[in-house]
Image (cartoon, rainbow, N blue to C red; front, side, top):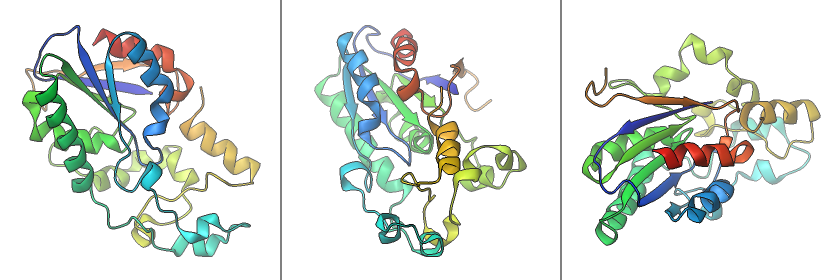
Length: 232
C-alpha cells in the first residue's frame, strides 16, 4: 500500500479537520476505527457516504439472489450507473467549502481511498486554497491529461489483483462488480488478499509513505495510518 500526499494551502498545523472519502466498494462506515483515533487526538473528522453508496446504496437484484446466477450478475445494469464523478466532486467540494467557512482556523486534510483519488483530483483543482493537504490512500493519482480508463487498459493493470475478483464487464453493467457475499472459499480468499489483508506541480512535490498492508489499511493497520496522518 502506498500513501501519497500533496501540500496545498496552509493554516494552523495543530488544528485539523480530516475529510475522509471512501472508495467505490465502501461507505463512510469504513473509517470507523481511523476516525476514532483521530478524534481522540483532538481533531475533527468528517466522513460521508458518497452518492449511491453506504446507506443510499442500491444493489442489483441479481446480487441479493442466492445461489448467485453468474449470467444475470454479469449482465444486469447497475442501479447507480447514472452516478458520475461530477456527483462525487460536487458533494465533497460542498463539504470542504462549508467546513472552511465555519472553522477557518482549522487546516483541512482531504483523504481519498481507492477510486476517491479521482475525486481528490477534481476537488483539489476546484478549491485548492481551502485544502491543507491531499492524501491519496491506495488511490488513483492520475497524471494530468490521463483518465481512469487509460490506466485500466495499461498492461501493468492486468498483473494486479483487482481483475481477478471482477465478475462482470464494467462497460456492460456500468460499475465494477464483485460478490462480497460469495460462498466460494477460493473467491473469498482472493477478495481478502486484494482488499483487506495485512512533475505535476514541481514546487509542490509528492510525499510517499508506505505501509505493509493491502488495499484497505484503515481496517488492518488503522493505528499506524492514524500516526502518519497526524504527522502531516
